[in-house]
Every structure is written in structure tokens, then in C-alpha cells.
Length: 400
Ligand SMILES: Cc1cc2nc3c(=O)[nH]c(=O)nc-3n(C[C@H](O)[C@H](O)[C@H](O)COP(=O)(O)OP(=O)(O)OC[C@H]3O[C@@H](n4cnc5c(N)ncnc54)[C@H](O)[C@@H]3O)c2cc1C
Image 1 (cartoon, protein in one colour):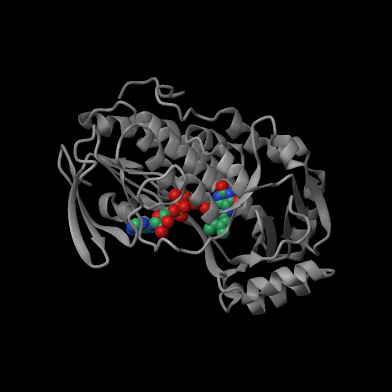
Image 2 (tube, helix red, strand yellow):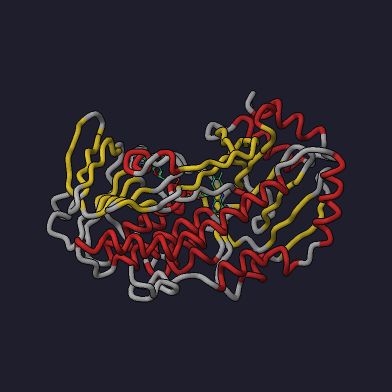
């Protein structure tokens, strides 16, 4: 906070997630000293698996961490959809299809955080925000670190994460709508399965099982209706397997390791959408603004991209310009992110459903969907990516 005091902008970033770390590091490259606080401990678990499409690449380039990203991740060349009995339906050469736009790779959340943190800089752990009060010129914030309170004055407070408390403190809670799929999942890890470039998903009757490779293991997720999943992974996995033609040794091992893993956790498949992303000097980014279901596999990419767009909008800004610059960021990024979020909700309706007749019809439809149509939403996002380079804000030409 002492280093930030004389900065052009005094910035507080709440949450060292995909968006928070990206924003902090990009602002550090602008010569600022953002204060980055994180409620979790520094040695928090590796989290879960992420498949990153090339939307994330411009951020890795802008931070000069592309080599570290390639070292910590693994190429996901193939993506396979399996039908209601586990039978293969379609396999997409995703790596090749996306190669003209960049990389498609698997990485654990912990490794992604390490990559984004690799240029250095402090994260203050065990710390959260307990109050935000805005005046026309400043945001006065109270921080809590292990029971001790600190007060600080900032020109900008940025918050990320699905359960952002800053959103609750500074933007009206009624302005947040949630979308509940009615399903939940168990997420964990298993040993590598001998196909390190393949991610696959079983779209079953009232269940969904998937594995995605990261550098040294595979992430496993098993989902179903909340009533059926909430009693623990073990009974639901048994139920899900009963619907499959066969459970081969690798799938059996992955599910056993998920059930017994000490990092396995329950994930209610809900998301959220904030009615506004900015209020004065407070801004939401990543899942705090629009949270993502896992169905489209793009939440982290959108979070990093949004953080990049926000950092670009803040380049050269004076303190009194912050609210206007934040509105410019929201104007550019919000329609794009919400369209992607709607797409992931639509996919959830397709994937998270029961009923034998429906599953049969879906199996037939998946076989017939042309490749082009299947990846059209991703291609559209890639074709229209906004710049994360300061001074180039495509689509933001209207003055406030
Ligand atoms: C199981 C799973 C699989 C996923 N798969 C993919 C995928 O394949 N591809 C993809 O692109 N996306 C995927 N996502 C989505 C992606 O992880 C999120 O969209 C992305 O991480 C959002 O970034 P964020 O920075 O907003 O939040 P996060 O990365 O969740 O970070 C938020 C951070 O803020 C901290 N925090 C929260 N509240 C406070 C507070 N009050 N004070 C201080 N710190 C706080 C949290 O501890 C956390 O570290 C997946 C998500 C899950 C759960």
C-alpha cells in the first residue's frame, strides 16, 4: 500500500484468481503497484483442470509468460463425445481446428496461477475486504488480515471470483441473478490414462462423466441431478456406471481415485450474472461479473481476456478518469461475455438432462452435427477477440 500511494492510480485487486492475477500483472507492467489480496492460503490445492482455448494466448504474450504456459500445460489435440452408454459418438481434432488461432491446452488451476504469477510480485494471502465506502474521489476500503483490520484509500477496486464479497459490499445484491442447472458435480484428480492429448465426455442419461488431461494427471468430473449427487461421489458413481455398457480398467481407476481423492470436492452447477459491472470506482471482472458453467470450457479464458481489456482501458488514466474508463470496459466486454455465458447455459440444457428417449435422440443428433457448426461459437469468439494492448479498444469508440 505504501508503494501504491504515489502511483498514478492506487489499485486494489480482490482475489488472486485467473482474472485478478492477470489484471494485477498487466497493471504492474504499466508501472503501477496494485495491492493484490487473496482470502486463501498460499499453499491452496491445485484446484481443478482447465482446458484453455486460444483466447488466453494474447494475455500470456502480453505478460511474456508464453514459455512458462507451454511448460506447465499439455496440448489437448483431441476431444471426444461419448453417448448414453459410454460409446464413442464423435471425436474432434480440436488442436488442429484451433491451431490457426493459437493453442488449445490442458492445465491445472494451480499451475495456471503459477504461470500468471511467474513475473513476480506480492500476493497478500489470508486477506479479504470487509467494507467499501465510495466518495466522489476515492474508494475507502477496510481489509482484514487474520483478524487485523487495515484501512486504505484507492482509486480503483477490482474484484473477481463467483462469490465475490466486494460485489455484495459495493454493488446492490439484487443486481445479481443466478442460473441453477439443478445439477451438481464431484471434481477431482486421477493418474494419467495413457492418452495425454485426449479430453472426453460421456453425455449419459441423467449423468455426465468427463476427464481432461493436464501435465501430469487427468482431471475427473462426475455430474448428475443434485438430489442424486449430494450424498457423496461413491453412490452416484455406482449409479452412473450402471448405465454404461462397460467400464474399462482406466475409467474404473479414474472413478475410484475421484471417489477416494483427498482433493475431491462438490460443485453445485450454478452460475451468476451481475446486472452492472461497475459502480463508481468499483469494477467486477471474471466470474464476479459473469460466472461460467463448465459446459463451454471458457470461463477462465473469458476472465483473463476481460482482465486484459480492463487493463488496456486503464492505461494512462488519471485518477479522476477511472469511473469513465471502467464504464468503457463494461461497454466493450459485457455483451461479449454474456453471449458466451448464454451459450454455456444452452449447452448445459443439452448436456445436463435425463430421460432415455431424450438421450437416444441426443446421441443421434450429436453424430449428425457438422464439425463446423459444433465449433462455430468458439471460432466466433476467436475471430472477434478484443485487444488487450493499451490504446486499442475495438468497439469502444463512443465517448461516455
Ligand atoms: C471444475 C471447473 C472446471 C472448469 N473448467 C474450465 C475450463 O476447462 N476452461 C475454462 O476456461 N474455464 C473453466 N472453468 C471456469 C474458470 O475456472 C473460471 O471461470 C475462472 O477461474 C474465473 O476466474 P476468476 O478470476 O473470476 O475467479 P477464480 O479463478 O475462481 O478466482 C477467484 C479468487 O478470488 C478469491 N476470493 C474470493 N472471494 C474473496 C474475498 N472476499 N477476498 C479475497 N479473495 C477472495 C478466491 O479464493 C480465488 O482465489 C472451470 C471451473 C471449474 C470450477
